[in-house]
Length: 431
Image (cartoon, rainbow, N blue to C red):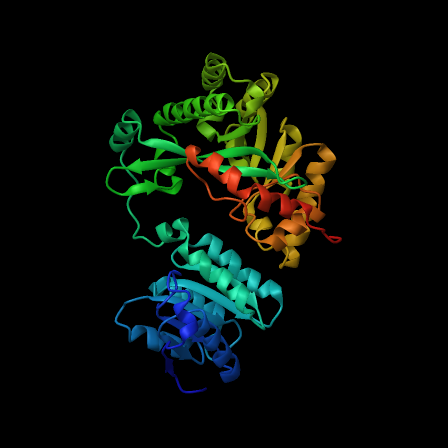
């Protein structure tokens, strides 16, 4: 094993990235090959990282990190296959001990091994997995993963955890109108045109700032507040649709998530229909998104209410579709108009063969059943091109736009129209 070294950034090239979230940060490279380690260090130095620690395997890395007196590094970049302690065990140790804010895993082995790491990252947010890379690592690919560390969602996930709010605090927040919506565009892949948006709940907390759903939705579920919360957000959507129409925007659909509680309540469906009718909005402008879990919770009542909503003219989408037997069974028996394919099968599908196969199967199912297919979590042009080649209808994800306040939509449309059209017009090869 090679002796541990510490490299500091003094290169002029790094200065050009002074505004990047990784600029000047302390990082570590773990690889048993001195040549590979040196190469990765040089890439990180060129990209503007600060102090760069080096280790030959997981055991040496942990000794160095423990010597940092509990202060986590910004990033650990580790190989997968190493003597002593391999990259998978090191990843587990980093999570358990919270010794790093972010992680990148590289390997020259079977891509399916890297896919294990990707799946581990999706199940555990104790450390921010920026992604995985096959060797030889390309500078642009590495910089693309590092850029993920600057996103608001990743930064929020790194904050200390808070207990879920009490019911009284949620009641006060609802009464004060603190729950609001951000909108994420859904783009037609063949034309680049904006087709619709998904409405995503946020909480403008007076102390903690803007909070994502995981900080409050679990506390709302199963309580009498859920119906009032959903109706309040639906009324915001209806007001916004009316405002966009008056501003001369093309017709748009907005997708709204319904919980299991909502879906099982026949009276709630009547309240939804009444609110839409009172606003003068066409039912076809609304798409109600439900998950397989919410359908299964109270199957008979859920199927009844889904049928009623469809008869009223609303769109219906199965969210987080998983392609398992249960998912296909529920999709086949419900009158869905959209199939939303979970980001777990979309993100990285151009790189990972297993995801590619599952994604292709899901798209073929949607196409055969004659429903619109929507890919969530589209983050790279490679995945975009694959989805186009496979015939996916709509895309949603950071490659196109992050969730945004309603008043930012017109500016986004104006500034991204040409880019989206160029994406849609790219030649794509066979799948």
